[in-house]
Length: 259
Ligand SMILES: C[S@@+](CC[C@H](N)C(=O)[O-])C[C@H]1O[C@@H](n2cnc3c(N)ncnc32)[C@H](O)[C@@H]1O
Image (cartoon, rainbow, N blue to C red; front, side):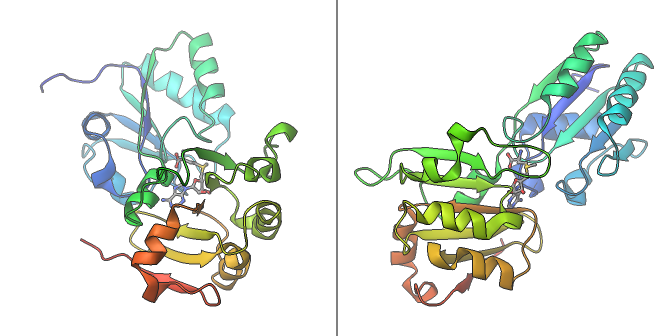
């Protein structure tokens, strides 16, 4: 085998779910690894369609850090190559910092392979650029506080909304009413919002609505997870070119064609 992968941990960003959006490097490592630990609620099965027949696939959705890290350490000590697969890109809400600290303490070598984040995949599906000259030149990537992690007060959603930038809101579907209320403190109610559910998965859905409909459309469609909100004046371009699909009074399903 050319350039076999090493006995170490590869922490890999799997992209949003479409296997064709894996990087070439991620694809190579996934196809050669002996052991793959993956966050099953966020990484769909099709990402694992080209693994070795003898690869050990370990779902981590029901495991704690105390179970995951010792397993990775034990496998590397057996001389095996280990992939720790996370959705999207590793820089965002991947909880890799504590894993890397424990691996470093155990003197286990590791390498990070970046991936395409959900916001990039969603913008591509919407055929939009999130920076438009004279209109918006900044992208904010943020989340809403959840059960497990609090957003620092200085980064409260309402204060970020004051910039009226393109804002990519992760991990917010369960708190959509609160999110909408905070956003409305600064964005006009007719600001376009793309509600992006499972971008790159087989059951992907995208709705384009006005900000004041963000919560009601999410709730009507029972969106509680794997949903990204893109709030952006730049989406006016999308709604202008897709006027049939957009009306501030009604929400319309925007279902991009599958290729
Ligand atoms: C734990 S975070 C991981 C984010 C990931 N590291 C990334 O860069 O996309 C999970 C959240 O990311 C967003 N997300 C991840 N994959 C998605 C997808 N395929 N479609 C829509 N949202 C997604 C959702 O907001 C979801 O609640």
